[in-house]
Length: 129
Image (cartoon, rainbow, N blue to C red):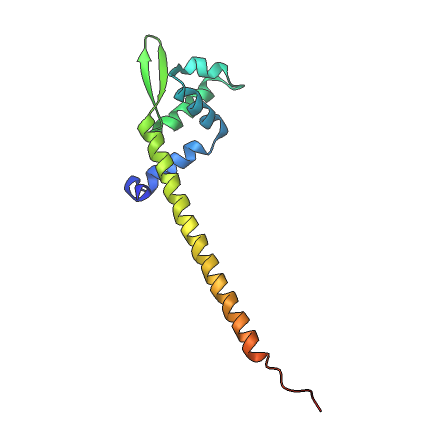
């Protein structure tokens, strides 16, 4: 399971990075092509430093890398890291779907048992006298 392979700390950093709207937007923008941090900062109503911090969180999570190009830092999405994130989410979804399916089966079995109990106790004897 990818979640186990990555370790709790790595998965925590990944989900923390993806929990913020601005960071998800930065990631989407960088998937389309590398952008400088200053170019990214133009798109948000926050300081350049705040955008740098968001990029740093994404970088610590392994979702993006930064490369120097002259005076600028270019932000690139790491497709493999995004794939690992997707796989981790898919595996968590699968685990939860399995749990929900098991609960549904148990409830159906329980409901079937109650119906049988009701039918067995509902014996009709002749009219009371």
